[in-house]
Length: 283
Length: 314
Image (cartoon, rainbow over all chains, first blue to last red; front, side, top):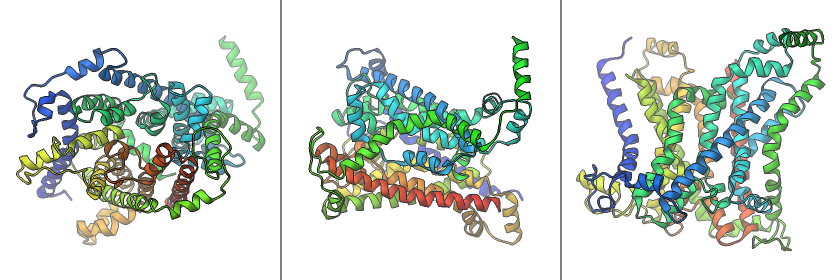
């Protein structure tokens, strides 16, 4: 039965309305970042800037010096990129290997240890932040990217373990059996047969992990104090508190902070549904 | 070189690796050891330490001899008159944001599952708010709600709906609702994708059968789609509840808990007690209460997952 014409028009109108509600705030973020302050701070909004300017982006990328607030955004972006990338690589490596054990091997305390990892993932950071702060201080890792990577890996790894183990479960087990009949060791089967086939799962898990690390705020807020390790969410939150009227610069920083996760999400869009089903619904 | 590898492979074939339970367990331990070190090496000490601190009257970040007070910090939470309004905000935030995200999320998921042209385009649009960093989202909405220059007042003015500027974040209850709206705008996205995943497991012939039985679209939704979506809804409900219960970032950047403490949630209140008032013992006890609430929700979540899996097998 083909849907009626009226129904088709109706759903397309609804989709356009939905798109407007979603895209309007994004558009306003971009417009604010290129509008001169005079237009932003006028009693009537200039929906289309009459004198658009890229000055703020120029300040962010060209400015230098520690007191230059615009340049701080660039440094914070760099920190965020390094911290999120390292966190993702480490967590993905250990999670991919460990997840296989949960999916395919029988061993004592299997369920208990899986729950222990999941429990860590669910812990609110506020419960750990004080002793972690003191521990990092003792190790001289406060306000360092290393300190953040170490902390973030403890959150992102359980997530990678869980989604990768579910991904393995969705793969047919005869693959490894065939490989083992052919004389592969267990490790050989994992490295040479399973991992190449698990690539889509690895990429999607990596994307989710990167977004988790990129978005993290509380630990970074407490553990960092200078441009040495400050991440982009902290830089934006701090700037919002201090210079709340200079929204143009906040918007430019916000646009930059949004670019890496938005690109990743768009690239992996078609895997998200599959990733969620294997990661959470099927359990 | 190639002969060597072939020889190695042959030798291995002759001596098939033992596959007894002991060797399997040893292999599992080897595979899990790196993850265990990375996770528990970092987390174990703070988990224990926070619990210990919650039993003492610690009121400075310095190490020192603080009086042991047992469970007094926990008892104190319930006689703290500041705690109940905070609990109220948290529950209100959790219930309203989860309800809105779920109902909007189901509606949008049904829309994306309908025969739209250029479906990939609409799906890509829906993904965007989810990927926007939480702090950027908060800063953006704080700007949109700005009483003097904000786009929301500007929009109402342009459309001729209201010409008097509103202070959207200026009064406690209104501010709480506006923060919830900003949260809903971002997080409905992930709900849509969860529900969409659930919708794709419903075979088309179920609808065919219902249509033959003469069920209209509306009845079909309530009688067929919604019940079949129940496992996905349950999962997303609990995940969102847990997240909403821990909400901190968006409050920090949008309102700082104000005005008049009207948008303080439990996680934010805990942060203030520990970092502004230096009541580390009390803050630790509050943090552990959040942990207990989150774990209780997580247990329900795992139970539903297990039931869902059994239902899937049958």
